[in-house]
Length: 384
Image (cartoon, rainbow, N blue to C red; front, side, top):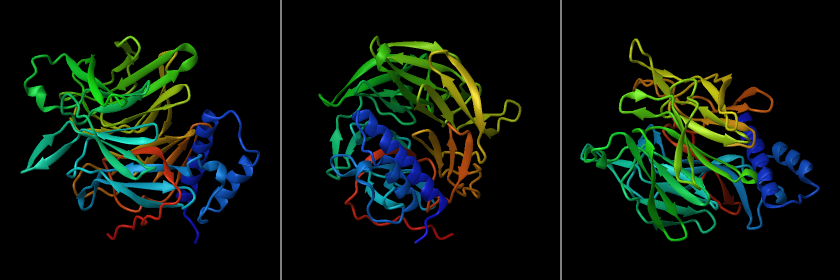
């Protein structure tokens, strides 16, 4: 069976990320790495792959799609792309009533899905509950609920803890302080949440990314853009997990909401999202990838996105940024999912592949090690 170009691209990216993470865990590497990479890329239809791409527990790095919307409505389905299989397959389902706008994060190769909202009797209900998925045991466990219910917030890992920043909450109506956004962090060792310094200003539908430089003892969390009520923001804030303090940084080049911020190497990259045209009030897609240099506190535009889209799943793997799913227009009759596109940071070029097998939007994407021995159903293509 001949696999599409996007399968080979995804394989190549995930394999490279697996090797990069492997190098971070061990100072030695098998001498067969180069030939193994070539073999995997050229033989994506083989049922087994090179052993050095699998960790000591027989697990292989995968790109994982979490939740979102499809033509049938909201879904809790989680799917994954494993290089040795070269296909998108079903992994598991979030153990909660169908929900959206939750926070996702990966810590110690466990997937956390926290908060979010669901519809009941045509009303939006926001909840504080969280769930943790272990791909090794293929089991979900519950975790302590957040101190407040949240949706449209950011969830990131810093120093082994989860940080929930801002977002919308049913408690907002009771709050008398509109000048800050409540924040809290989760300690997996004690299964408990505690409040941390609030983020200055009200903020929802923003992006967050952690950035660490061990040599300088920097453990920072960055938050960019989002909405302050009806205003799309350009502002950037930095949180220091060691001092529990926030600091304003250089603003983004373009206002963005519903975007993604990725930490790759020494820089942060903002991708996707939208802003409002000041004259018409219409939504405009942000069509660039902008890079932020953490140490110099400066921004620059590095490329223009060939196919801008709303609510794509955006994930960084090694030195490439993948755009998976999303839709091209906010009109109800035009939610066609765009092709998968990837941008190579090192070579400054774009690659285009096939679609995800189904139309999807408002999902999130992460990387996670998945057992290679799984025998899951393939994601079937939509019929439309």
